[in-house]
Length: 539
Ligand code: ADP
Image 1: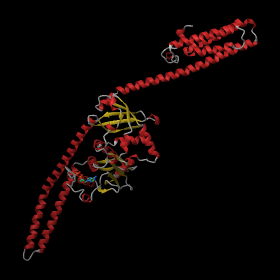
Image 2 (image 1 turned 90 degrees about the vertical axis):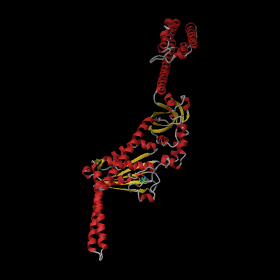
Image 3 (image 1 turned 60 degrees about the vertical axis):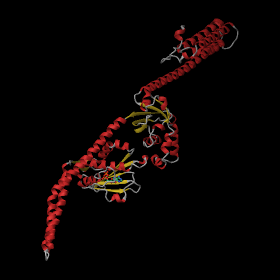
Image 4 (image 1 turned 120 degrees about the horizontal axis):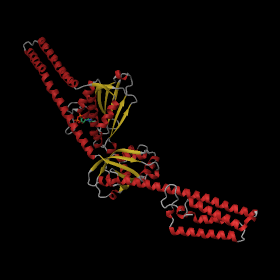
């Protein structure tokens, strides 16, 4: 029997032994020597002494002593060798005259050797699969580590266990709405954040945070999170709700003081005891945001300019058209005065002149109306509009604006909302105006509470109207402002133009709807408009 063939290879490849490499070679030698001595002793006693009894059973000891030093094949060969020696002793000691009890004793010994072999092989197989599982685990951990370390995106391992336990306890105490709880306890989110610790980060994270080494990012995460960012509360809500992942946008304060905007992805583990190592990925989108913001600012500037141009064009064309009826009004009024100034006054002629004044005044009003109507009509192209899609698109358009104001939007749609008919661009401008006003109104609202609710109610009756309400969490509308809200050029903002709401109302009215504003019973302003359902499309 060649030892090399029987030994378990040092590196436990699939199907090989349980890792002989871990047995010290000196120990292995001692075990085999012990087995050899035991084997020889058993053979001598069994063959050459008169001791009765199943002495060959003691070969089991030989196998136990050497079991750790042989592979599967080696163990089988060893068992065969022991069995062979037992049989050899039997023939030497008893020859042809073996009695029945000697045969039974030999049989017992062979059975003991057989059973022990099976048990040892089984033990060896389970050890082998354990070693293989451990090796696979180690390989996968190594792979994960190398992906983690070399990934170009910022990766963090954070310990959420304390905060998770705290949120679970809160839920047990009956706190279901974490956002409401955070509003009632302003220090809550910060208190939670303080309990989240970073246990490991990769090089990309150190680079993102402008830190000289990853080690300096470890410890409490709090110092990298600006105070008024609503993202941590959203993450906490995801933990409290037992979500499996979180995706969103967050602010990050780098070591050089720059506040970065990052896209955040977190995978939460299934088991509570794995929250000590939650993997968080971040991608820096600060530059992209800045470009978007510049684009938005340019867009807003363009919108202002086009509004100003519209107003300019409107006034110029009204001024032009209205000159003639105004001249007639003045002339007729003068004539009227003249008739009245006569002695005696010619009342009849004066009444006729006054009537002409009224007629020309009305004409002037009609001209204003028509010119405005023409201007709006010229730019219009009506179509059937799915309000839900338009609102979702508008929210997406305002994404940067929303994140700048650290506000969120909640949308609520009735189960069935029929289409309405309007100019898409003009209607979107109304939504943008109302939502932007809402954002401005929440400038002094606590960050966690900055929420816009856009809700759409379908009509109760088939050809009734569709209502859209935009509610903010600002201070509401003061009485003195309420009365003048929709007046052109009325504004309380520095640099405001005061044309937004006037244009919104006139757009909505152009399509046969209405637009109102009020202060909500629970605070904040609600701007509500209604438009007739497009029954031709709906049916
Ligand atoms: P601007 O935004 O240029 O001031 P607007 O016509 O859009 O013009 O608004 C007119 C005024 O109405 C604002 O200056 C503000 O005082 C008031 N206002 C508009 N929206 C809101 C709101 N959501 N909450 C409170 N006040 C508002």
